[in-house]
Image (cartoon, rainbow, N blue to C red; front, side, top):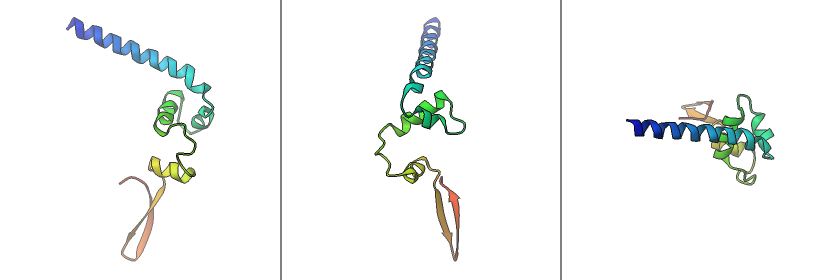
Length: 90
């Protein structure tokens, strides 16, 4: 049990060190200002979002491509003679 507690303490220390490194490094990235302008994104969550989408500016042809990748682009669903727009998802 003591060995597991030592491992847990090491994992917690590593997580704290990583969070501190993110707080120092991410705001220095050229695109950090853009990512951090999204409502609700702070440095930690902004860095996670940035890690997901990457820093290749040519990955998406336009903003719609990024929105589709994120699952937030409206999808038109048709049923019978009517159609409605809904936000991504299933």
